[in-house]
Structure formats: C-alpha cells, structure tokens
Image (cartoon, rainbow, N blue to C red; front, side):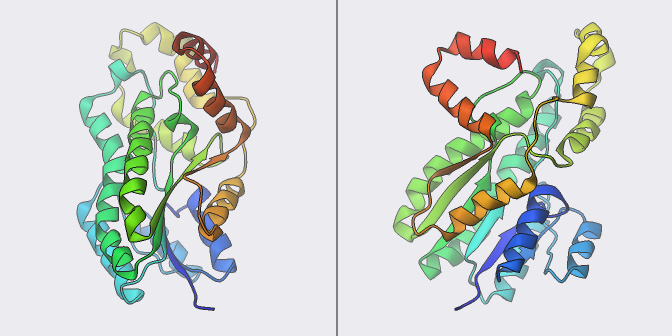
Length: 274
C-alpha cells in the first residue's frame, strides 16, 4: 500500500507531537512542523522531517509548504492544523495588537497555509484538511475572548471551506477538544504577561482577588490526555467519508448540547460558573 503523508503543525509538544508520533508508528510519512527552529531540530533528531512553520510569519508558511510539496512530489494527503495559543484576559484589557496577533496565529495563518496546499490537493483530486478547534469554538467563556474569537472564526471558516471543497474531493474536518493536558496554560500565561497590563485595568481589584489565581491555577476539573485528540484525528483520516466535526472529551459533547437547547441567558449563567 502506498505510504500516505501528512503535514502537522505545532509539533513541539502536546497534541501535535502525540499525533505525529502515533501516525508515524502507523506508517504515515509525517512532516512535523514547529514554530521554533530548536523544536524543529528536536523533531529531526527523532527522524521526522520538520519544516519550520510559524503562522505569524508568512515567509515561513510559504517556505514550509514548498518544502513539504517538493518532498512529496507535489502530493499531500492531509494536513492537520494544530499550532495555536491563547491570550487570556478580559476583552477590555486585550490590546488590539494582541487580538490581531491571536487571529494571525490561530486563524489567518491557517488560511495562508491552506492557500499553498489546496492547489496540490485539487490537482490530485483528493485531500483532507483537519483543523483543531475547541469547545471554545462552540461556546464562549469569560476572560478567554481573544481565543474564543479565533475559534469561532475557524468554525465558520471550516463550514464554508467544506462546502466549497466538496466538488474537488477535498474533505474539511473540525476536531473539537475540551480540556487536554498540555503546555497550553503555561504558554497562555506567557502571552498574558506579554500583552496585558492588569495593574492599569479597571478590574485591578478583581485581578488581585481572583483573576490572577484563576490564570495560574486553572480549573481543578479533569483533563484528558493528548492521545484522545489523536484518536479522533486517526478516525477522521481513516473514515471513507469523515464527519464534519469530531467532538473530543465529555465537556465538548455537553456544551454542544447546551448550545442547542438552552436560551442564551441560561447558557451565559451556566458558562459563568466555569
């Protein structure tokens, strides 16, 4: 059987790394891209081809896509968009430049990469584009507005792209995880410290009394392993006709139902308890 190949972004750790290793073990040729060169070097030391792709760097996107397409003879079976981060904080405290960076990293860069690889998939008459969304692409929660905005945008984007690519034989799939045990919170704290001047905020007392503790301590609820997302990715890649969405973790399933059946104010109340 012909070896299938896939480009995965955000492979420095967590979901991307777990998916890369599992698919490699299953016989896929995996291009395990990372944002930083030192992480690419670590993936190469494992035996992966690891182009540098930073969604906030157009040149790296173009060069990374070209490297993958040249290595595959212009044919790419699948891409799994996974690289993303969050800038937490109340929206009134998120500078516009921060929101712009959030959308670049979590949404616009994904579109840029798609524009480089879709022509090759179209020429082959088939391909699969997987986009790692979130339960926060289904419902919003306080103090996560920048990240929520990027994931809501991604959900609508995927719905339209799925319809538009149907006649080209290209499947578009959303993976929607809930709480996953990764380095996501540590990365979010670094982004918060970079962008949010909480000492100048009208909410300074809230930060001192609870918000900073929430940021650093996080939820005490269950977290699922990265492998649970990989399981969904594998199902989406192997399905003859993949589902438009794969919900991962119980909270995602619960919030999808809540969004459908609860009035907006009731849903707000439920989410405010999270």
